[in-house]
Length: 394
Length: 207
Image (cartoon, rainbow over all chains, first blue to last red; front, side, top):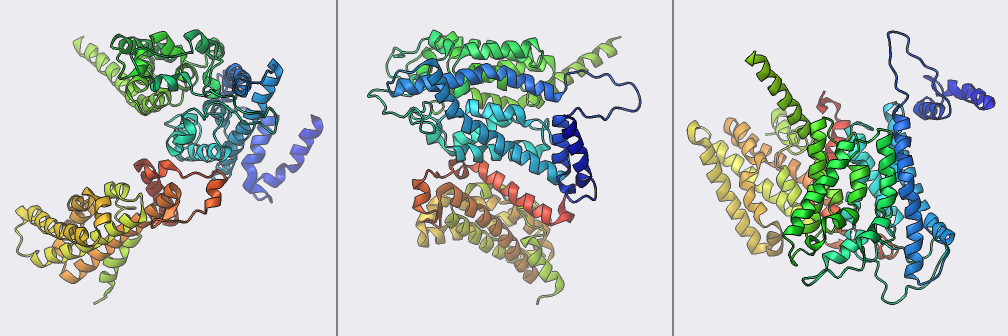
């Protein structure tokens, strides 16, 4: 540790004003604060500090995502070996999923952090840690068969156009990870939906190759529901299957159990707002019940019962990890209830009544991201008016 | 003929006072007709023609038009010209006129046109008004062509309908970006052009 400190001190002058590498100042700064606690302290006044700074917040979210990530790796292997009809042990499945997901994680971080570093150099600003969470969210919500170059293009697009041009971490209007997915969804629709997107059938780094068995379909439950014909749903997957999560789907979204563990971590540490999370589920239940009450074969997804609506697809993942993003969501307490409730309603509304999109959680969160400032504004104005009235009455 | 003022009337709209980039006018048609290069160029030429002629006509009539009904007169002139352009396109470039559909007709409501008639043609002689019309039309067309170039190249892999991205790219997994065909990406492309333009012309940057 000491030699590292010495080394950092030795190379410091090069990075300061006038040094040979002064352009890379923020890279040095970023590495220094990454390795050591910054030794700058406030000089005046009283400062109350919480030990919970941005870095710790971000890391907590990453920890909360770990159950989803680990389960995703196992499930990718599970689906793969099911597709090729081979027997495999738990560890073989996990290894396959690890090998399949690793390149996506590396690409997501390399592209996103690369752009953040370059942006910080150009503006001579500190490198911010905002991409830590986004970088792990992207591999979890992008279908596993998406070609890596597409993920790279989409990540670059999202970081530049959804974050950097608004002023960087904490200033973005839309959730960066969801913009990545939305970009992929609209730019390369054939790779983002259908039977071939969600189950990796070819080998990962030459591991686990084999031929797909006859009659295998990699369709997600919601994908199957969307093309259902007739008065009854012909669905093999039960709500319990979806709760456990060994079903095809985007890597992170399949298992309710893993998501609920993550939700518990976020709520216990107080990182995420329980108001948003709860109201998304209530909104989803309400809309699901409404759709179920008026179920028709024209919209097959309306025949799903409300609980199944919550367990299938990306609804729960969006509710726990996307809607609760403090930057893009509503900040006022009443606003958070409205914001969350409408996300839940819209997610199910799009899923059930828009034939083009079997899943609506992503679009619902992005839509409400755009409305979050307006909701906050109305709540604050209403409060001001209420108090003005009270002041006048006296 | 080409005094300093006339030159300004012609050259300013090309970059420094570009109707799309600086005045942010005519965005609607910029988003609508730029999915392919060919309709974009036809649209650009149509706007240049309508704008130049209507500028001259209004400039000739500028002393006889009562100010209270000037907008109506301008609309009549522009509408007549737009109908002529529409008929010519239907006669000689039927396919393109189908692609442009309502947007040729909507030149009537193009803010650039009304803006130039109000701001320039009503208070200038025919020759400068003609140059101003051509200049603004060109300024509009340049942006249309740049946007359409990127949208057609990345969205369809073609330019003027000819495939330019080699087949082996597709064989190796390259895919056309479907988002480029959709209007939102046209808006973002225009945004990028404005970004580059502002960073090169520091005096245009808003504080």
